[in-house]
Each structure stands twice: as structure tokens, then as C-alpha cells.
Image (cartoon, rainbow, N blue to C red; front, top):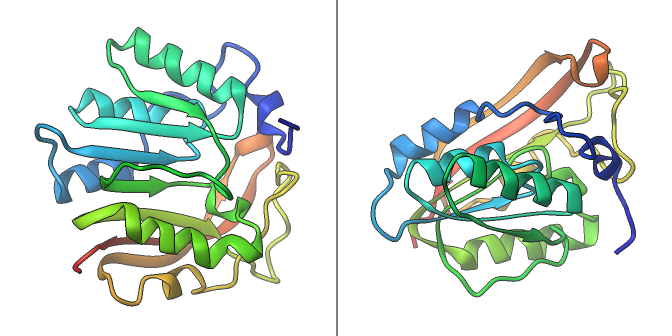
Length: 204
């Protein structure tokens, strides 16, 4: 597989590029869909696995994939170090397939790697693999003309339009939706992002 992203390089070392503390949204999803026997989670674009491993520690059956070999290597190592097992493998958000159904599907900092022609099909697939009354969490970086492109913007990332993400969930029950601008220090240089976020529940 050709390397289409800088993250393969950024994930090479032993240090964790994003750290190992889970994102806050994991606890929000746990509150909405508490772990119990057989509950399944899918992490799309898991990076080095910090969120996927945390969800496994909480008792979910976790499947996770990322485009980078180094990300998956470190995901599996982190899981082993913390005494949990997850199904983690290399795959591409644009072409992935699964025969599983999930109670929670989430993706952070990855949806902007979707090619334009794959957006509709991707979210239709998300609808098919999410169980009834299952939950999804997605965020995406949004273009704002007054914000400069981040210094660590990756090779194939593409900004989305404001509100575009929300348009793919017209029949879902929305639990959280927002658009925020925040400061970030990734890459060692202070900069700002605009991000759209949605948490919603499949009702039919």
C-alpha cells in the first residue's frame, strides 16, 4: 500500500503523537450507550489507538482500523500493555468494509480524508452497520476564510463546508451538534481549527 499520509512517518517512534489519554467524547458515548455483554464499537481512523483501547478497557468489543501500519502496530501494543484485546487492522476510510453491526461507531480527525465521490456512500454504509438505537460520533475540520491552514495539515486532508457533516444524518436523533473554533498546538506551532461535531442515534 502506498503511503498517502504523513502520519505513517509521525507514528514511527515509541512516543505517542496524540498521547495516550482518551478523548472526552468517549465518556459521553459511554454515558449514552453503557457497556454490557456483546456491545460492539468501531473506531474509524484509530491512529495509535488511545480511544479504541480505552473503550476496550471499559468492556466493549472493539474493532479499529487506520491507514497507517505504524498506527496499528502501536494500537496493538497499547492494548497488550493495558491487558485488553481489540480487533485492529490497516484499512482505508474510503473503501473499508465489514460484516459486523455496531452499537457505537465513531471517528475523530479522519472524515476529512474521504474523497468527495465517496462521502455519500460512506455515510450510507455507516447507517447500515449501526444497530437500531446505536450511536455515532463524528467530527470534521471546517473551512473558514479567516483561519490559516494548520501547519501540520496532512497530504490528503480536505476541509469541509460548515454544516456539511450534519446533512448526512437527516433521519437520526441528534444528541449533540456544534461548530467551534479552538486553538491547537499540534506540530509545535500554535494555530486555530474550526470543527463541526455531531453525536446522534439511529432510530429506524
